[in-house]
Image 1 (cartoon, rainbow, N blue to C red):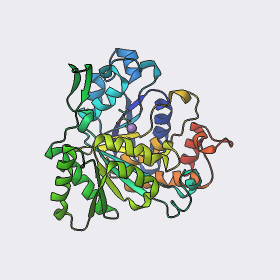
Image 2: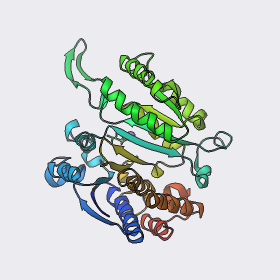
Image 3: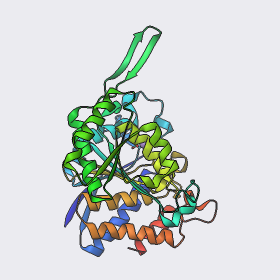
Image 4: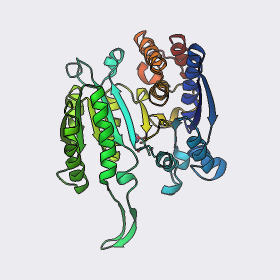
Amino acid sequence: MNYNIALLKGDGIGPEIVDSAVRVLEEIGKKYGHVFNFTPYLIGGSALDACGVPLPQETVDGCLASDSVLLGAVGGPKWDTLPGNMRPEKALLGIRAAMELFTNLRPAKLYPALKGDCPLREDIVANGFDIMIVRELTGGIYFGERGMREAKYGEEAYDTECYSRMEIERICKVAYETAQKRNKRLVSIDKANVLDSSRLWRKIVHEMESQYPDVTVTDMLVDNAAMQLVRNPAQFDVIVTTNMFGDILSDEASQITGSIGMLPSASLGNTKRGLYEPIHGSAPDIAGKNIANPIATILSAAMMLLYSFDLKAESQAIVNAVDKVLAAGYRTADLAHGAPSLSTTEITDKIIENL
Ligand code: IPM
Ligand code: MN
């Protein structure tokens, strides 16, 4: 088959890690007889520098015309002082919205080979953990009404958390279905003791419960969830939560896997076209040094093969190759603790050798 993939390399380490994933995909293409056509588009700070906006229309059109999108990372100190709607991060929100990607899947699992990198006590992670965070991605406070106003104490800024029934139902449907395909345990995370939007969220979660009799669903307040993730991560199978809670909890979950450099993500909507990106940022401090960990992006490419193209064996081949390379003891600098490490291109070579 032929697949057209839009590449949004972005800023910082983005180009290096996307190049690694492209090399892995090309090798998969050779091995399994697929042709992947890659078309790069500008996004983030590099788009700002080249054409004055973080998300050029050409990029949006290119992504919508592609079969799927692979993204590196956006942002950096150079653009940090720009107003909110010109920041590189705005481009990420813009492309998620333009592609209507309301679901963000963020798997966080502990690799046996990386157990020693987990900051949690050994007995806590003795049995490992494997969590799928289903984060709502195009609603909530990220996209709610916002602004500046004069109020009692002078200048004031506000952002609004707002969720409609439609938005809650469609993300919960994905979460329930995801749980059905896994261990059938779903935890819905909210702040229903304070927020009306959370109370509607919780109500709808339970309205839908009877449609999924094989899934056990429980509610958890977000502050408790932040604690439970480090107290006993193995209790979680699938988590469903809002845009902002999901943003925060997925960073926490990534850290207990050993390194944020390991975690891929898939952003999906109602079509097969998705956007796949590592959950980490652009790491400007190590950009251009060929030392970034490309594994999160390589695993994001594996998620693309699975979710957008239904290429199960090909996707699994990448996951297995990463497993083997880690099990053999190869590490990038973020996981080497000062011991000799492999560069971005070297670890990519190792993964390709193991495909
Ligand atoms: C993420 C990032 C983004 C988010 C930022 C860069 C807008 O933190 O993908 O988790 O908050 O969604
Ligand atoms: Mn984040």
